[in-house]
Image 1 (cartoon, chains in turn orange, brown):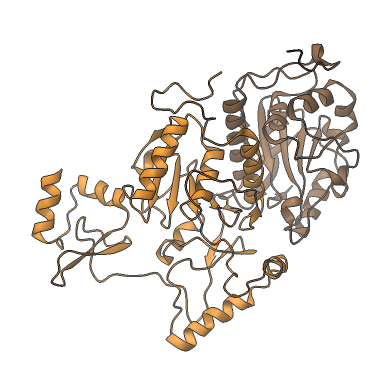
Image 2: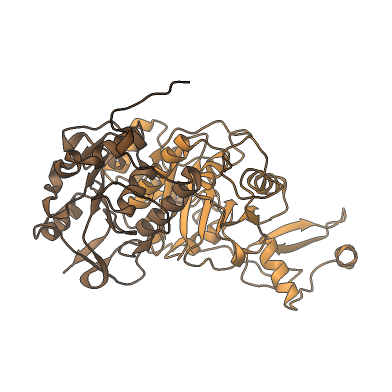
Length: 304
Length: 203
């Protein structure tokens, strides 16, 4: 009996989506409990995957547990669809499920991400799967799992506020720029995975379901749609996101997260959207930036 | 090959037609129902469960139960063919004490036991709180309780027929124990709705 859809590129000899059914049920039960207790980390029996821990095995296991033949999968790594990790994971699921893949955020039903939330607003029905290296927000403050578990049970999160306060004392501002801690539904302190804090406001009341998987640390957690996600801050030091003093050099966007790109060995640089799909959509719609060196523009346009 | 013959084999109806893909589809419907409390999801599966078991109830059991999940069956379910069907197709160990079960299956909503009879989990491990699969006569998106909480943009409305009158007060009292609590899947025919422990009910 064949389980997968008829598709010539699907590898034979594997169950649909690689994992066996017993493992999927275990993952699915953990995912349902994660949705029912927003922000709480659920331990699960993380499996060996055909790539090493630290390369997105938690996200891959979640995607494998939820994905079906009707899905369209998008995978990004730091906002880009075309980096090694993203390309490999996309190809893995094409071979193991035969599902359609896309680089366009609006076309995807499942978006697996490493360290970014797409700039295009996600909508109801979409699922955002985060790859998480360290799920425990209190880990660097309290190394003992037995203690952090108690701290979550008692909602005892003073230590994190002290850490942020010490930042202000030493640097005059909160120094945490990525993996910025959030409170979910007013109850659980959660690590949003190493997304830039620029992306934190997108998590609040997001219409899409957000699932987090940490393969090496064996934890799954979730934020259901339309759920309050607040970045920690102080009344006199409110949470702020990064700002750039110039727009994207390629598409001219002034409201996106920008990466710095070195363009030559004479100190030349430009800032471009980290979300490659969003940037391409804008350029296709006629938006142009002015900051890219002529040599770079010629190379890109020549290549297209 | 002789195979293993169980006494009830002749009477058992089959499980999922496509075990892998049907379980995936049923899981996604369950996930959508739990992500949007009060929303009624319709399953489009071919499933022929034993008499008295609705398709959505059967699909939830086949999707979520296995040898790792102690299940408690309400006396009504345990008595007839449902128990043998669930045991055969899922392999879940049946427990006689409700408080020791990870899942509980009830085919008669009116005889739903007190919520305190089930395991609500602990403050450190609230995920150990049980999941109830409750079969009800009807689910309706109008004229019922007003729901708010995670997964609900503003308000949702859900009417669940057949529950004991005491349910609303008991379920509202449970909210005070969060993060401990129970997550409930309501099944009716091929339709499914969910009340995770975070949902706040207003009459």
